[in-house]
Length: 106
Image (cartoon, rainbow, N blue to C red; front, side, top):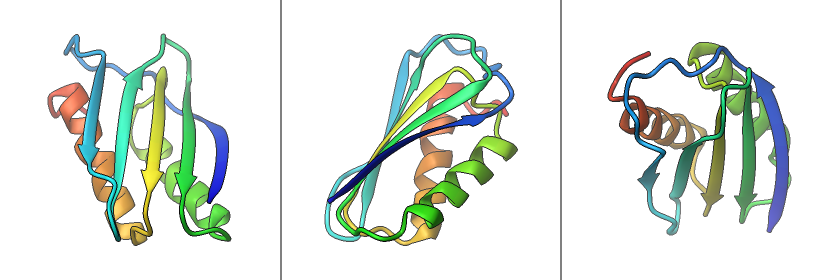
């Protein structure tokens, strides 16, 4: 099990919805869950990752940095519990949680 935390600069979340959090996915073999929570009005996206596959921290950081660059997610906390999901699924779950939280606003 590998755990790490990293904050990424991101434009502030500008969604109109008042939802405090959103969840996408489920922890299971080859899958992951992403919890996205409102965490104030800062210009950072705070990420906490727990993965069952050690040694891929640089890949995780690249995927999260890419998401923070392309989506205004500043002022959010992202918690990820992973059970060996491929990178494409990580991106999908992040976008699903974001869409649930923001109502599709980008």
